[in-house]
Length: 277
Image (cartoon, rainbow, N blue to C red; front, side, top):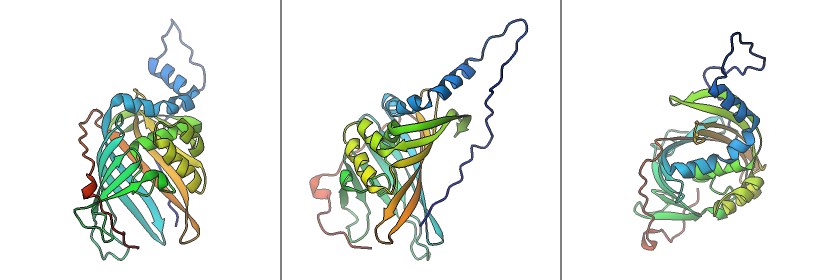
């Protein structure tokens, strides 16, 4: 099962490399100077992106996770809010229709919390009014893929593991001016640099993925906040003994949006066995 994604920024961004000759004196464009600095220190800029989200406090988020199985491409979409200081969020995740078209699209409510993923309307024999709790550090992918969405803050902390990066140029995301960076992050390095429980999650991912190298495209605004980030993960499918490629895209907007997340009480969590398949 493989996933392919062709990303386009719409218009190409030209980077001037020659000398500009001015007659009668001229002042440099501050934006050009900032872009030159961003290009020279691309890795350092990306390492700070998670901190910029914490400073922003919160945002709304849209997610898309794409993969191909057999000859069918499936996309799982999510939408909700996230609090970067508390590292909690709530997303409504829309599952794709099955390849035969036998089932309608079904939505799952997911709560993201430090070290835990809660899912409601999970199916697989779980009552509709009960939550399923998953210890994210116990997942072989650190919940970067399992929940059908990549935790927005974990996605940002992956950039702390950026080893190489190139500044592509300026473009726009949802009408907002951004700087586009492309590079590769190392899950092991990200785990060492991550904050709190994300260390355990990223360590699990470093062990569970087919490779610790994660190619990415990141789009940062002038405050250094991530507006869009796309990761390409590769993990081993234990059932089919093959490697699965997954492309995960997260779009962040409406910074400062209110986030009200109430985690389930113990009595609301399903304690039975989840059906296979």
